[in-house]
Picture 1: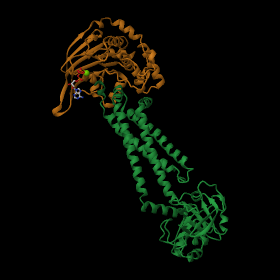
Picture 2: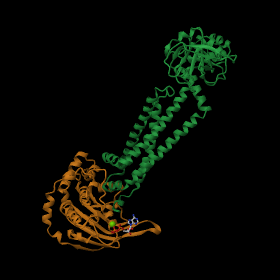
Picture 3: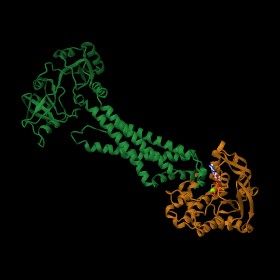
Picture 4: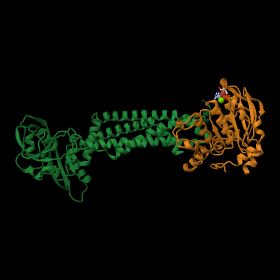
Length: 260
Length: 379
Ligand SMILES: Nc1ncnc2c1ncn2[C@@H]1O[C@H](COP(=O)(O)OP(=O)(O)OP(=O)(O)O)[C@@H](O)[C@H]1O
Ligand SMILES: [Mg+2]
């Protein structure tokens, strides 16, 4: 629990005057134009805004996939702009869970094996990794489909597998890019519900990029983005019962403990 | 992650089989053609190897290979015998007369004439009869190819007759020979008879076969014979290589086989390399996800190498097994006998296949390493 004490002293993500350029010379474009953003632990933060405004780019910088051009990015207390390539890889492996719009599951692996990939990447033996992933998948309602291939699942089920993969190694930051936009409304809601119930914990922050106004109800905080900047941040009602969520978080089983 | 790599590879069944097939096919083609080439080259030395009684061949300086001989004089036998260290030396004749069966069937044959007294050089691997039967009047020994040509579908029996240069000869023995280069029947007769069966040529001594006294090395005796007689002496092994070198340098055989082998190599590299590269490209998104999740470039390199090695190993095993099976099946066939898959060819083909899959995987690895993990967020 030392980690939690430490995490509580600073926000999960802090961006200050963050900029990101793509290309060089004539073709250079500034996609992020001075982003200021705080993401708190124990919350689900939605990042919304018109297409092309830079949401995915911002998410990539925050998740350690892209380097910022200028400005400051502190992620989980570490300076993400100063990380070398290898450090960034290690940082992502330990601390970040990813959920993609297109699920990006490996078609040749079973559901349980897919969810176990982050543990395998951390060098945990296959048997242990798959067992931990299976436990989590059961919690997400996929206990019956552990040995199925992704192609045999519906979109909602695949996104639940992706969710398990994003959580199995107990990351402290989970980033999701349009997790519901390939799903119908009901399925999307179910995924978002799981995300809020299972992913959000006092020692973890969840950032979700979305177009979909119907998922706003799940947010603790909504950051509106336009033209490479955060233009407005709203706090939503959900974050008003934090004790309830803290309790739920404390009751979470430890899946594999790669972070310890 | 090794398990993930293997799953990725075999999960895409069609491409996996295509890759294995490409490697197996080029392995088969390369090893098969190399084996036939080596076998053909080996065949040029068959009659040299079949002489088991003597290790030293003495010939005219101008004789470059077994199949084209500048004749020696009868004196040369005595000159070789007089070289210190020679245990014994005997004449050996080789000619190409035409043999005729009484039903009119005829064919050019290789006629070997061995020393009347000692019969040195006579075949040892008899199917029927004995080399000693050469001492009978007008006796010849015939190899199985010859017998089956002149008496097709007939059981092996002795006493059948043929005509050589208008002289009637009696088959007193049938033997197994190593397949000759031209795949002609092989006959053996006594030296004195062999000359009359060939006719025409006047000077008929082809080689002198010699043996070193105990304690004297063959190489040393060859040097002594060279110096004392001005002829060329070589061990059977050296003469064999001399013959092979002649064929390599003076015939189109190596070029033809070289082209086939090169085509197998190029096609194998292109097909296997291309398929593997496409396989990786199609999995680029999966590799991108793995990179985002935090799999290091080293790990990914290892995964791709593992996939390539697996394809190489399985494809190679299938290909080389096909080659081995081919020559195992054809080994009983008289025309194809004597071709064996040398371990050197198997090893060499293995090295080439390893090179092919490594080259293919290097291109793929490059593509994956330069891949930005951020692409995983793009549709
Ligand atoms: N690697 C890149 N090279 C050049 N331009 C890029 C690159 N990535 C993104 N861009 C540009 O940056 C801008 C913002 O892209 P981004 O994907 O961050 O937008 P977004 O807000 O996620 O949009 P959407 O809602 O459509 O997903 C776009 O104009 C895009 O073309
Ligand atoms: Mg986007």
